[in-house]
Image (cartoon, rainbow, N blue to C red; front, side, top):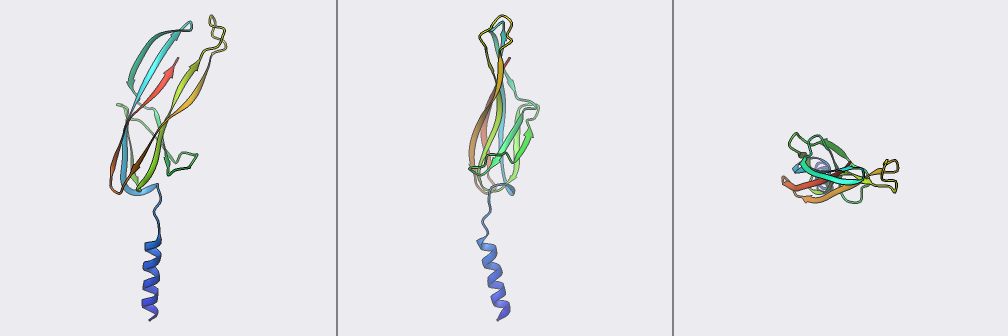
Length: 142
């Protein structure tokens, strides 16, 4: 009788565990990073080029409502990235754009400044799914 009760208690405990987003699963998220870079000379836009986001840092947030990232990877030489071994759930993937803000004193640019702005996408994946996030385009203004 004790063995039956103990067995039922173990089965109930295992079945009541809810897996949350994070490491330890079989799902993955892939994507690609592009960088769109604008060159300014003397306050005037001169050229804009787009290229693969090699070595750009890409961040992942597990679940919804979290404010801190859980993991970070560096994009490959061709701008591709892959977060592997994830549990089913919702994930936010993001990177940072560098935005130039021009000041009033254009000739010597001494009051120009840059800010980092988040570029993010959210995806929900199921068990063993290979989710494709698509392309994240980061802006770099110089």
